[in-house]
Length: 519
Image 1 (tube, one colour):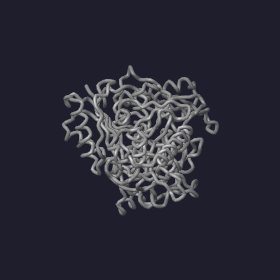
Image 2: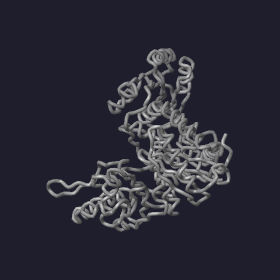
Image 3: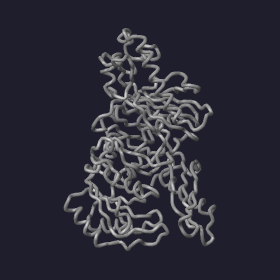
Image 4: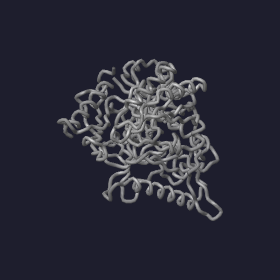
């Protein structure tokens, strides 16, 4: 059985067909507003190029930046009732207090503070005000609010109030999607709350997007299950994405990094994914993206779900190259983006781009080189030096030690990358242009547990770790992973000195190869 990997980016939709560990074909198509037609064009191209029988495609894996782009562009977001259980505490910082004003307005700017919540040791701040929840339910109905997000103070210690409030809302607002914060985030009230609100605002878009993917695959005659890649480079079932779209936020750069590790066989490296507008830079550790240790900013909002430590710079194949009145040459951050095949000079346009510079210097062979033969050598060399300096600074920012490790260049714009970057070797693997789709195709199934355990009544740290690992493994197998391929990739425990009962927070993550039974 073959695997089909698809990555839906803001500019291009890439598709690859893989037979085991072999890439049979890779194709790029333009991303379309309706999603479906761009996906169909890419996957049809990949299937035809591979020359395979589509009936033998066993699984489809899709990566998408749709949900991140929706938040950044302030489009396709629902109005949300943001309910916090915590009065009389936390009143000085209302929900969405640190959100950009324009994003607050888009999601309705409706924050509610309700009596309830817990102290850090699990004691109630005050009992849940059920009458207030019922009143809020009436407001939700009257104002046609499309979703609700419930956050309780110290819910990771005890989530009973969140569940009780959810049940009340669902009873009084039948059919209303309700997100509770403990399903999304971790310790850290404002960040966890923001993640829950953001997730709730994306639920309608998630439903439409997943339905569009399903329709595209059905129209292409594919009847196999499909999965969507999440932040950490592993897969989740399509129906889970309908409930938790925020978990896909960083799947684009993550797929590129996983694809880079697979195509090169290198497990410790810095990956630079150069697209049409930006370059995403991050570190690989044990073949997976290194996770960010701090809160992650998404569209101006601080959240605390686990995301890869990836950052972007304004350098891509379509970046504009300009010389000012003083003779200084600049590259980016403005870009022609998806119009590069029309606007760049090598493709018949009139705009001088980073790609034109690479072609004029002979370091790339795309388009018509004759159209950039008149570019001044001094201008081209100055632009090249500027691009190399930008890439060197980005790579140095990702280095964790002075030890030399390779740089893996992927993405359609990686023709801009030199063969060496400072003291580091550059690897440009075969199929580098579609590394993101390869990363989607080879993604594994994961299972994760992150909770607070009380080390008492005979429970030891080792027993709790073993229990968490067993539960994470069961989750992965239930999602479709082969039990015999399960391996632990993250295991950490942090003693919580401020909690009674010798409490410790344990986080365990496992991954396994696809092939089990998906319930």
